Every structure is written in structure tokens, then in C-alpha cells.
Length: 333
Image (cartoon, rainbow, N blue to C red; front, side, top):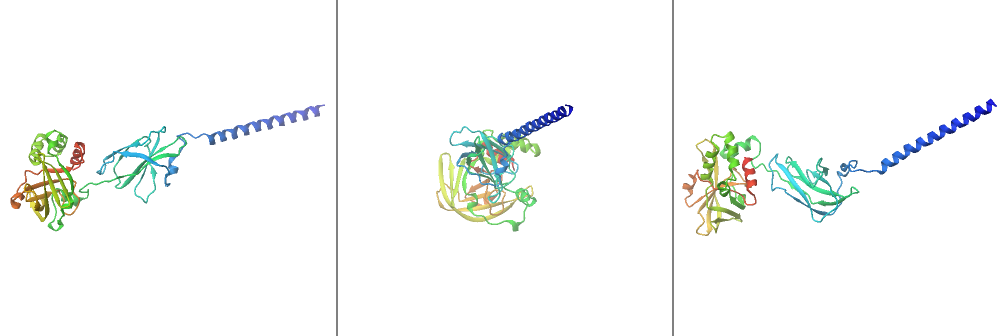
């Protein structure tokens, strides 16, 4: 009898242990299956898309990209959908060249992008994902152009400040100044450039008011706009416009009272309106062929007398720039 009870006890214990093990195994397997089936936004890693060509139709316009940036400038972009969408899962991608792979830009997960201009030629695009984490629509890429104009190396800075050798100077074509240009004089009169004069006074040898007076004389002009194209120069003055064709007449190196120097690149009128000056002379801190980003212009009918003018130098920036763009350009120099 005791032997029978002992055998029954052993059988019950084995059955109990077997049942417990089966239950535990089912619980573990059930948890693993659940984890495989649940996908949250946080768990999806878009870095998996790096190096792959994203397949989605283009239907996003990127707004806010500037014509060019200076090193360290803030890049602010907006992705605008061409058609409404119920999705709001954004990611931005960048690559340093066409040969490089697209990489997810960390921390940029809305329709706006903010970054710093550090890589010239950087390409950026926006992608909107659907609820299954698949690309729904994307933008064409935009390119970040960094142009510090005069460079940050010591030699470039010295040239900009007017210290160079005669042997470094080279002839330039009128095409270096080709474009549509606006005078900055109206911005000075409206007070839009006061920030620039305040900035100059912080490290300069004049007060803000003295700088403004100095530049008021320098910028003064009635020629509010200039278009240069295919060897022709058009002046817009008090509602009228005049056009002339110009050819190169060489350059002159000038030495200023402060000891630094500048170069006037001179062009002579060969055909056109009688109202156009016989000579125009460009000064833009450059001394060899390069596209100009702003310039000071002198004009008149006496070549030699014009070279002596050092107090009035009407200054022109691209017409596409608004007041904020002009202030930014001036503060960068």
C-alpha cells in the first residue's frame, strides 16, 4: 500500500512539473512573438535606408535655400507638400557629393530643417514616410553653396585688406560683374544698415554715427540699379534707363593714405547712349578674375580725374537680395 501511494505521488509530481514547464514555455514564446509583431516609430531605424536610393515620387518643394552661404551661417529650410497628405513622419537626408551615400540627418524630424553651413556642395532632401514607415513622397535635392568670397586663408585676407604684390594683379573681363545689381544707398537712408554701422563701431575707430555719415557720402548716388550683360551696361536713374557697350581699358593700382592699396578695373564706352559715362571703374577688393559679389563703381568722362575720387563710391549688391541679405553680407566682411 505504501509503495502504491509513493508511486502515485511521484506520478502527480512529474505531471505538475511537466505542466509548469509547458506553461512557462508558452509564455516565453508568446512574448517573443508579440515583440516581433509590434513596431513603434521609436523602434524603426531610418539609418537602414542609408546608402540606398529612396524610391518615392517627387512631390515636395524645398523652400528657403539661399543663393550662397558663408561658413557657419544657419541653414533654414522648409518642406512644402505639393498635395495634402495625412502623414507627418518626416526625415531629412544629406550627402556631401553625388558619389557619396545619403545619410539621415539626426534630429530633423519635422517639415523644417535647421543646420549650419560647413560643407560646400552638401546636398539635402526631405522625405515623408507613411504609417508603415515606407517613403511616401520625397523632394528633389537642393545644394548648399558656401562662398566666403575672399577666403579665410592669410593671403586672401591680405588681398582683401589691400596688401598684395603687383605681380598678383591680372586683367579682368566685364563678365566678372555680369548680373542685375541694386544700390545700397536707399537701405542706408531708410535705416536698414544701422546694424552694420553699430557693428563696425564695436571694433573700429569711429562711432556709429560717424560711420553712418562716412558711408552716406560713399554710397550716395541716383543710379539705383545697374544691369551688366554681354558687354553692355545699363544704368537706371530717376525712372530713366541708359545703355552703353564697354570694352576693357586695363587697370590701375592705387595707393591710399592708410598704406594699403586697391585696383581699379577700367572699361571704356565704345557705343551707346550719350547719357552713359565714357569710363566706368570697378573696385571689389579682388585683384584677378573672379565673379564679383558686390562692388564699388566710379564713373565719369575723365579717366585720370576719376582715379582721384576716393570719397564717393556707389556700392552695388545683387538685386535679388533683400535688406536682411545685404546686412548679412556686410556683417560677414
